[in-house]
Image (cartoon, rainbow, N blue to C red; front, side):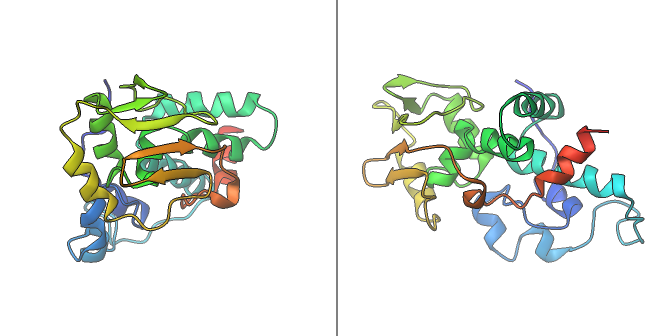
Length: 206
């Protein structure tokens, strides 16, 4: 399965803000953005020409890295969103938010999307009683998420729940039994991603 394998802190530095790709580390002084707040590379501290295309491209890259999606897959998400009724940018973010790996992070069952992907791929979670090992699986209304009965990752998941702030209103979580439910699809105001989706739409519309 294709995935990003490069340094995650460099991705945050490239976008100029924390994307919380490394879980707990991002909350400490060891965070790459805290230590070096300039882009990586030989010319990282130089002046950058902020063209319209550059701004749009950086926004798309930021969204892609935030959700841990590769370029081809992100393009497929956009094409699906553009065919749906409603605002294309909001449709895109809803689809990304409803990915199985992202929902685990929102529920507090994983400290980062990379950890969530690993837990899913190793078969530690079920959806509606069936084991699901696809991180990009699209969750729907009333889907019930639960830890697999034979999972050996219970302590890792409980440690992740201690870092959780507030669970979004479109989700319901029980951290004691490690179960959850998708109540509905999220509204745009409930999506905490640091992304201006209109810039992405403008980029792909050229």
